[in-house]
Image 1: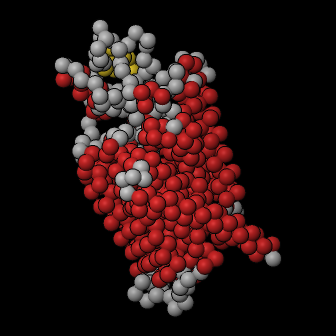
Image 2 (image 1 turned 90 degrees about the vertical axis):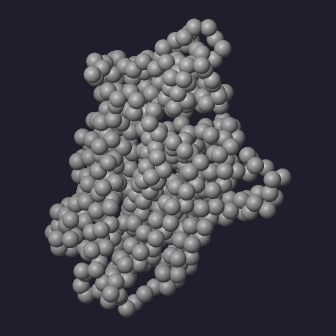
Image 3 (image 1 turned 180 degrees about the vertical axis):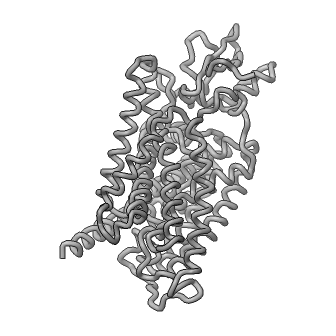
Length: 497
């Protein structure tokens, strides 16, 4: 029988204190990390505490719920977790199913989650990156990025094996301190915001193509993106993650359908196809090499969710296999889909490969890409909104509370539309994400955590190699940003001419 209220009673564990206390939680209350070091004779209580409680209300002072020092430091005085909630695990469950949060992910489920997070929209603009950097430029960047990101990911996994936590903020706080925690949280929120900009570009540009603006120009690109933002706005009225979750399920299905339609469209394209490729092939372009490297990073930016994915597994020791298998699938998919698209369209490859198609296959691809952006938009906005909801938790019973939250979400969407218009094309938006966010998580913070945790004494060679990679990643991001600015300036000069 379903409970009549959304409140759930969870037992707490007696950690040497007298008496027991019950913590009342609801589906909209903030995150608090579990403490794995507590033992209790009651197995039910121990099990409940050992599994992550993602929906625990502010703990009263009389409660004997114990938090580890690391987690206590990452929770504000009002009981709010400082680190953002990722798209993969919003931390909220259906109030009618209180045992849902106890269930951990299997190895195959963790593989599916990691693949979904990494795949994203990369395959839509990777062919354009090859058209800009050339075949060898693309392959060099992809090879360097693949090798280094696997190394940095395995280094981060080594840290997590010794320091079992479930968010990047927690491990950063423990090893690097409060200041670095602020940096990590800020970049995580920036990454979410730029993803919103990318989804607006995807929705708006494909909506323009669907409306035939290339023929009669009744709908401009900025207005198309604004129209896409208006269409997606009602999804921001969904209050909780449990109500948004079905959109996430559809986004996974639609991604696979899109890839299939893209490959099909390339093979039936005329006059050129992978069987009859274009004759003019660009092989290498130094002027876009570092920008291309930064743009490619968006397809390998899963390091930010490694602690969470690993912590949500039934057997966290198997995550190394999940990591390796995901990279094998990703690299194979990226190379195959990028080559088939570039061999088909050559120098005419669009910054979104969907814009190269016409006819019934083009309409289908553009519709599915619009739906994919739509299904991910509310999910990406939710963690940003949740931070504000946590800070204003004491006003939750006020009549204006949800009006303010909805207004904030719409304001974020409007700001994302403005930024998307300023940045321009999808490759530029993803380039900014790669330069600012992916570089930080893949090349910098993961290796810093490893070096601090393991130390120079364990392996001086790896310690020095990691610092070389950190310096390389930083310089690559700076040069990528420079090439992005130069490319934008050249584009504006060409437009004015």
